[in-house]
Length: 160
Image 1 (cartoon, rainbow, N blue to C red):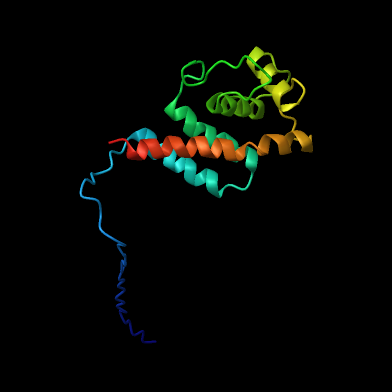
Image 2: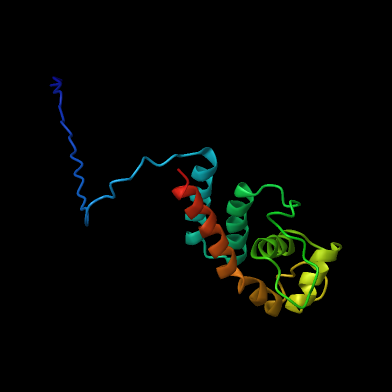
């Protein structure tokens, strides 16, 4: 038996073409973006949040963007104290309350959160995902949370 060995040589190549268009001129005062670790994480969270289909998860991710910018949720300058259940709370405080209702269970013990529950017309308990009305009410706050997170990212992107 005779075996004939043959070596096969394969050459593979690849080209990567980039195409871009610039509409108009760049401003004369344009500067390089100053990147930070926080901004990078916030942009990743934004990317995950906007693609996510579960509204409650999306709310949690959006609040994480806010929390990176203002990590001390007890700071009354960023999250003002909520005292009157007849008026809407400060937007950042409301975002904090929404996140708290989503991520905890049991009865509400915080006086501010109890006032917020009264404001939105729910009992003083954390979110029960089997209660469709409660879930719809909480998910209706998605635009508020998205707007606040987006504003924080815009500020970080324009902060030179």
